[in-house]
Length: 213
Ligand code: AMP
Image (tube, rainbow, N blue to C red; front, side, top):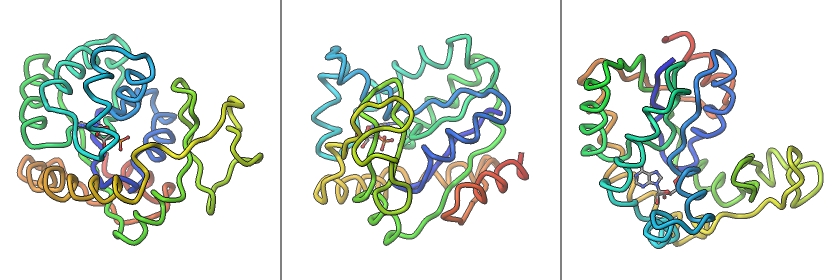
């Protein structure tokens, strides 16, 4: 499958992508995960991205596009990909369209996971993420805690609250989403690729996506 997952921060894109990739070996590409890896590694890209990320703003389109152009051409993407958190602006979507056309790649679907603001806020403030950048498993202190508090079930690394999960940063992220990312739903409706999915259950979201493919 070659799909894009749209949806606000906390809509469940990461959880859905991690489960969905088991279906046909498509790679899960999360620009947020790649950027957090770059920040941790202290690369030039990481240094430029960190301030934007910590404050809840978006990293400039030019940095994202050069990062994604390289990623899309890596051999593992040939099996298929699930984009999570990309594209996030209309200019990114337009550039992606050009990149895909140039490489003769066709998208199968853009799934827009639509979850209420109340649920999103609750999820983001109670989310914990594995601090190991190769793992990044997601937990929730209320609905999906790790077996041992503060320790990842999968790799044993500490689980942490992300720097961009403070109330201020969450508000900025939701604002950036409403202003810059939400218009993508209309963009992909026009190209006939959009499927709206309204559910808070990842199993149900996955079932609807697989049925639409
Ligand atoms: P996420 O894990 O998808 O919520 O992304 C975390 C942060 O990384 C976002 O708040 C942005 O600062 C940055 N980011 C991730 N993906 C993008 C993107 N496609 N364009 C711009 N910034 C991004």
